Length: 59
Image 1 (cartoon, rainbow, N blue to C red):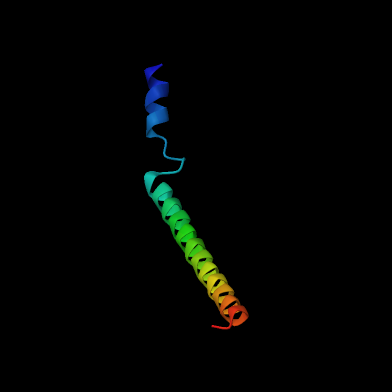
Image 2: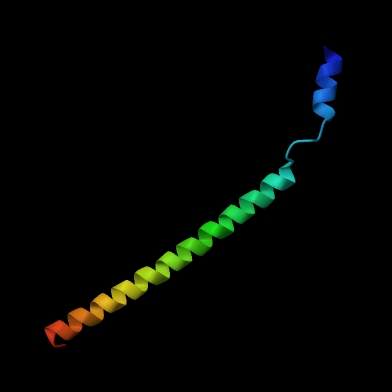
């Protein structure tokens, strides 16, 4: 029984902490890029709406 436990603990065929850290970093970067793009699109939309309102109200 102990032999099986030692073999299980010594195997390193699964993902390691470094691989998890790299995946987490890539996910964080992807989230940051998408939030940045969404904020830019939202700002452009508000700017266009403000320009339309200003034109409609004659300001």
